[in-house]
Image 1 (cartoon, rainbow, N blue to C red):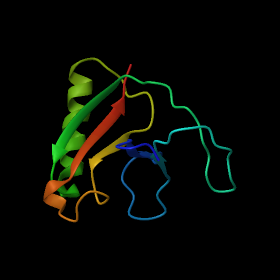
Image 2: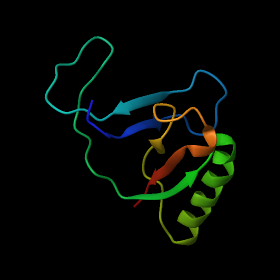
Image 3: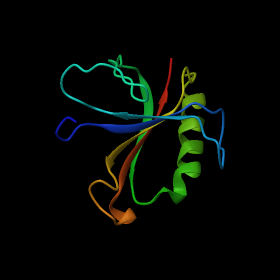
Length: 109
């Protein structure tokens, strides 16, 4: 894994789900690796996003996502792909959810 590399989750379901969530976990690595049965390696192209970075637990994600979607609509953008979250500070760095730093991103055009 890359030192201080990005960790993110990409959510493919259209809307909130309690279980059977279609999510892809991405972890930044250094070097070239071959795919395995359960792990795929690929280069991800840059994408234009509307995003909000917040500190604290995840209990406000729904509200924050609503505000991002409102901003996107009010500024005449369209969501053009699955939303994703970048975990700048998460469980790998702290056990205290009040210290989490998460960036919620929506690809836009």
